[in-house]
Image 1: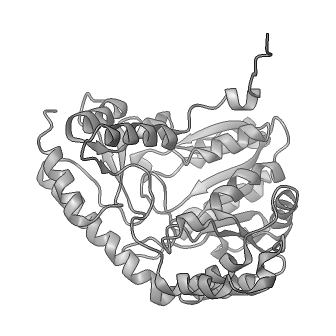
Image 2: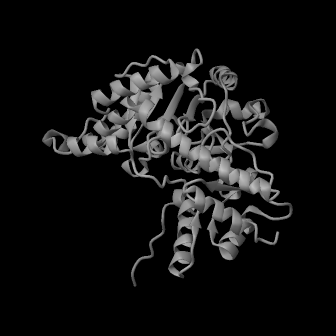
Length: 389
C-alpha cells in the first residue's frame, strides 16, 4: 500500500486561490460552446507597445544576457527606475541601495513577509485585498489582522480603530492605492498619517502601487513623497498593467535601504534574477513612459465611461472610480456577491469576480475588469439589462 501524501499545513490553511477558481468556471463555460464575456481576472487585452517588444528583440541577441542575471538587477534598469521615480514623483532614490528590480510585484510581495516577519508577528491587511497579502503572511508564520475598507471611509482603513495590543505585535502594514478591487485612491495626507503611525509603532509599510500609473484624472502620489517614509516604507511597482506586460513578469521595489536589502537577501536565496533582455525592455518602457502610457490610460477611461454610464442608465448605483481598470459594483439588495456572479455567468454568460473572494468586508460588491473592447462592454450592459433581479 502506497503512502498517502498530505500537503503542508501552510497550504491547508489557504482557501482556493480566487482567480484560479474563476478561470476554471470560465473555461468550462467556453468548452460548452457559450459566448462568454470575460470581465473577471485583470489581464490587459492589448499587446505590449511595439517599442518594448523591439527592445526585447534586440536585447535577446546579446549573448551575455543569456547568463544568470545579477541578483540586484541590471545597473542600467536601476538607473532608469531612479530617473522614473524622480520624474514622476520628485523622489530621489539611490539606485544601488533603495531600488530592487523584481519578477513582477506579486513575487516581491509574496517574499516580503519572509524578510520582515517572525513567527507570530502580525500583518495589518486590508479587507478586501489582493489575496497575496494574506497568503504571504501565512507562509511566513505570521498572523493576519484585517482592516475593513468601507465606503464611508472612501475604502481606506480606519487606522485609529486598530487596538493598541495589535499595534504592539504588528510588523507590516499592507496598503494598496490605487486599490484593487475597489478602485479607490489615497492622497498624501492619508500617507502622512500612515507614516506617523508606522513610526510610532515601529511598523514597516508595504505599499502596493501596481496601479499607480493607471489613473484617469489626478495622478496618484507615492508614499515615498512623505518626509520620513523612506525610513520605514517599501513601495512595490509593476510594469504589468502600466505597459500591458503581465506575462513579462517585471516590477520593482523601492524605499528604505535596509528593508530593500532584506528583501534582496530573500530573493538571492530563492531566485536568480530577471532575464536581462527583459530588464532592458523594462528600461525602455520606463524611459518612454511619457509616450507609451497616455494612450493606455485613455483607452481604459473610454471603457470606464461607457460601461459605468451604461449601468447607470439601467439604474445601477455604480461609482466612477478615478484609477485602475476595475469597476466596483454594489450588488442589488438581497443578492450576495457569489449569487450575483453565478447568475451573471449562468444566465447571461458574463464572468465577474465576487467581492467576498477578496475578504468578508467586500460582501455586497462584485468586481468587473475593463479588459475587453468597448463594444463588448456595451454588449455586457445589454445582457445585464435582461437579468430579472
